[in-house]
Image 1 (cartoon, rainbow, N blue to C red):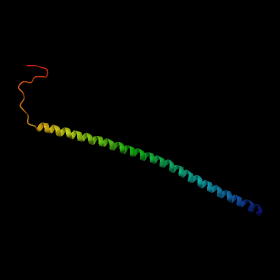
Image 2: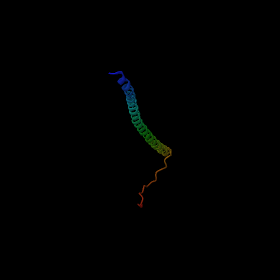
Image 3: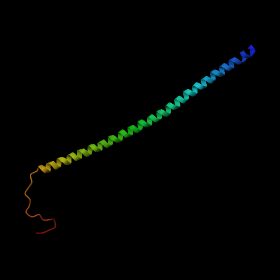
Image 4: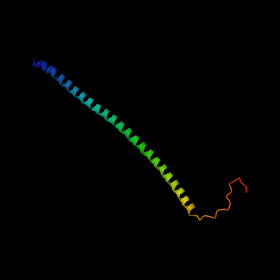
Length: 100
């Protein structure tokens, strides 16, 4: 190859080669950014699902605590009834609506 031809062709080939390398680098970077965004959105969805699950569990825990408080009140009421002295039973136990 004549040296004049090399001098004419070498700079455009070098520029084109550099341009191709830049484009390849941009493609790699862009695919990495896209992958990160997809993974990031999936992670955000997981975090949202976990937050929703935690809120649901907290609500259910509040309900269970309220039920335990109500049950405790019933037990205390029953204990107080059982501690009362029993009064003497009436002689005749007539059913309502019956006459002697």
